Length: 640
Ligand code: SF4
Image (cartoon, rainbow, N blue to C red; front, side, top):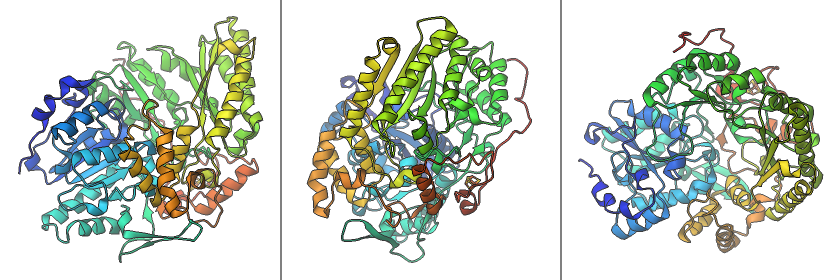
């Protein structure tokens, strides 16, 4: 049965909303396939506005991987702003895809990628607008299977009531496996209805289906155990890991946005995973092991992507791009090759100790020389040992000194406040560090217009990291500490005016912390926030701390808990954590030992360059570290 486009009805509303272009689709490299020629259809969502969602690499990759397959189609949908939401409700227009403006409810699968927990209320808004029951238990075979992915899905328990399934890890192969299960079930005439297809997915061992797991609680509120409630459903669900990035050169045809978006460049992921071992970093821990894309693979992706898009900037993405074993050759090769076309290169993240001036010069050769950004994360040497961010102040001063000496005028430094064991003094040392940076900059450049911006936000302990047991600092204490730092910087007569200070107050961090380490009992809080109008919680202008606290105060006492129990409470070794049955490959005892090492201020090396220190990922997932150098060069070498 053909599915009707909602565009004629939507079009009538667009003159009355802001930035209507974001809802019309038709971007360069977007795809519309014949509905009836496909038997498995995915609606993919990044649950934020178009301007943030469109450049998302995860969604872009899955969109292309699925659309390349015969008989499978994928379309995209984004969160609509409140002005359009109100009109859609008034005129009965459902949540739609931007590709063919088909109603989301008509699809077989509705996949959402959560990079942060603050997208949960936007998921509920989209489900409701789509006409899909919010509670998974109320859905029928007429509703899509709602699948969560992305980093936040490593603990999907707070949204267990609303999703049908979650996938942890890399999505490329996982979406194809899910597609085959759904395809077979549909071809058989959908035996057993929704329960059956979800059971088949759960039995694969790589898809988490919350309804097939029961959670039992202790009288004090902690979890006693999580037990599968159907035969053949595994006790633990495994992470997906793509082992050869060169076999998955996506996106091959990156989408070119119609409206303004947060990044307007093509991006190539040059490696996945990070084994530096920063203890606060969930992304590093859950994406292990390190898998590099080869230098020739990178070259081919850049060439194809630029040809397909016409972008003038290439972002070389990863968690710490300067750590690629052949980054110098990659940067030089690309800068040479695209010198005439003035294609700019950027590394969105650079470690202080991996920075070198030759690399920085190559990166800025064809483009603008903007500021340099580093993330020491902690203000004192002591706290950097606690978090295993092995950057000494000497390293930092040496690095910025080289940068200022070579013509850079701006350095941005990122920090966190509220790290385990942190005191006021650890944070106040950030001001001393910034002062030394400015002094050194003035000395080596002979100029007075040197600037250093300190950017700092509250630390949120995350699942699957050594800090998953740590108490989170309360919003009030975070804000008090940040105020002291601000006063110290502003009070510095000699250097204060050269130091910019940007901080995020502690309140959003508490909500993020509540959801990050939460369990199924938080479903009631999320629903109450949504029903009270909560949307776009990642946006300062929409986020309401009071709304979250009121919803928590209304719902959590019925289970004897409160927000502090989830956030500022330290967990013990024995406690069953809500995500323990989701296997990221990391050995829980290893994580605990690393937590103890952090309290002793003991550092751990990077296993790329030292023997394996048994975090568990490689044997558990039958994976291995894959790094170069390959010794190859970027091909073809001729200047383009
Ligand atoms: S198992 Fe060993 S080699 Fe593999 S990521 Fe962990 S520490 Fe590194």
